[in-house]
Image (spheres, rainbow, N blue to C red):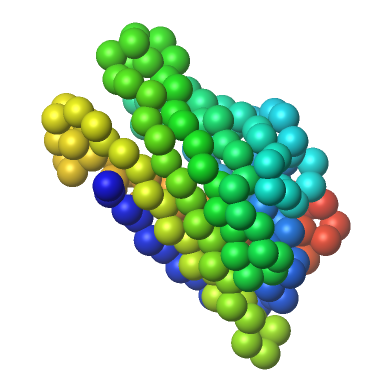
Length: 164
């Protein structure tokens, strides 16, 4: 199973970072691939919460159906989900499972936000696309999102509801 691991240090308390990052309604503010969200989105996700994330990653457009599987505020979070592609790519490529785990560690008011994404690539074509293109594109989007999250949290925009 492929995995993408990322980390950022944010000058903000872990509880604040956790609450902001696990509130799906905030995702369009810092995730460059998130077009919108629906479902249980208006607060930090609790175990059993479900939501749909509309996304566009390069040439692929679709949605992820997520469920919060574990929640240990403010240090850990796990969501599990499945992708569904739209258009002809949705017909060509199968729905795939994935999971994302957050681990937050606070030291002196600064939070290390560690993110691990595991996903399946069940066909040979998906394995090749992952190695050649998709993993690089996803890693770039994740790095950009974590940079955006850091900026929002450190600017105070998360408390005011302002966009960065």
